Image (cartoon, rainbow, N blue to C red):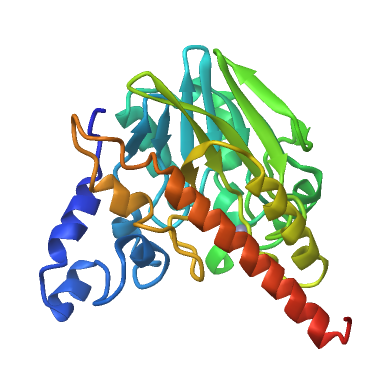
Length: 306
Ligand SMILES: [Zn+2]
């Protein structure tokens, strides 16, 4: 596969050899911190560090987000599909990444929103404006998006813009475009209307099933019950070989053998695609489900329910 690897990621990796002090000054993982982890933790507010180069994960799939939150571009001959859009100040960076991998943001036909948290949907309205893309989210999270769009933005900024609500995603819906079919799943837990997707990616023409998770862990109360039900359904989806996390780093259940940025460093012409790893997926989703089961059991014990 063509190696469109991040300049800043390669830079960050080489910096691992430096001492902790020099490292922190330059921007990079703290000692003991992983690369994917650094985007979400020590370097969370380091805007320039977040602007990672796009990553070609498969013939028809590109990571185009900043480092701390995922944005995926699925390309087809008849237009493209964007999963999430991140938020300002990274929207121009996402658009630049799309152009850098050879596509025109104006050709985005659909934007699907994983859930109604600002880091995932904040940039959607701007990209919808310039592309005319149809935007969808699950019903429960359209409510969250509407509510969030009436509150002030990050750092007391103006409220985020509400995207035009074009469609409501329901469990089992599909999006067909340019010979590609996306199977949409509503997997509540992280919020009441998390959206996840499975679809086929091609690695030098060889098909593999990919799964984008919009979020897995419950956030208390009824969401913990829904999370168990959601991960039990996701566990039943067979033959997943490529995992697309909604954040490259999720504390508590890191992806085995490295996440997006660790794997991006292993991309090498003529070598197996490091993002194709069904074993890591199996291990991760089994653990994610068990965490949900354990959390619910703990809730019930605390509530005195046998
Ligand atoms: Zn979230």
